[in-house]
Image 1 (cartoon, helix red, strand yellow):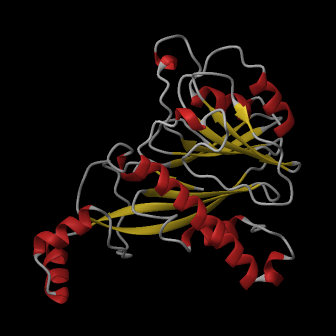
Image 2 (tube, one colour; image 1 turned 120 degrees about the horizontal axis):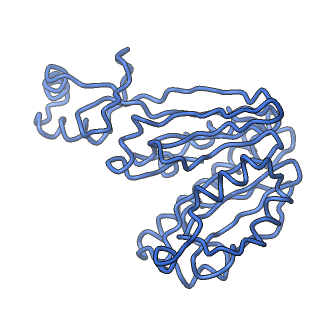
Image 3 (cartoon, one colour; image 1 turned 180 degrees about the vertical axis):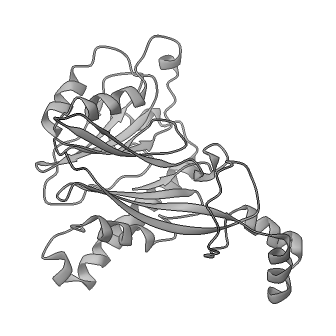
Length: 288
């Protein structure tokens, strides 16, 4: 999934990291953005988890004792739930949920989407097996659709991202049937990242990272959007070569619109600055 988050609020991805937590019996391997402890990843039981922002209108979860989405995610991962036991646990949660979020849960048996809201129990889809489960940041479950709190534009853009990803999945399988081996979705983490990066609608300027959980190989693939500082001399050089005002170039650099491999160290300030971006690809293995 693309981790599309407001760059200013999430430190421009400067503090994004991968965490591997192990005991002698089991482990968990996750990507975490900006130290928020809101994990995307997998556990030794073969459960993979993705989490999506879901703006719902209910606010009662902030006015009473309630479970945060982070608590739910870590319970599913650290307790070594499978898809079956995890959905059972969610169905029996007695404590209210704090706010809206959407989860995509998967293991060898299939996948489900889960939508959390403070106004009722988790909404869990039917089990999907053999076909891709695609979602974005708008409600898919009937019980959550009436309480969508985003603007009409936000809803349309989320639907367009979901549709764009669906089209890319279809195109990927059509162009590479021998690589897909008859499957309707990529079968490796590298292939999944290739599908995400193939669409500017899916991997956009708000994307701080792209994450793929390869549950078969127990590998977590992450493309970090790294920032590298841009100098004043580079601003002037780009402005001269493109015949653009220096202020316009500086604004584009501050927004992360210019990709370049400078060889410099990754920025770790979390503050606005003129910078180049590059996509740094890494893969991590859950050894337990």
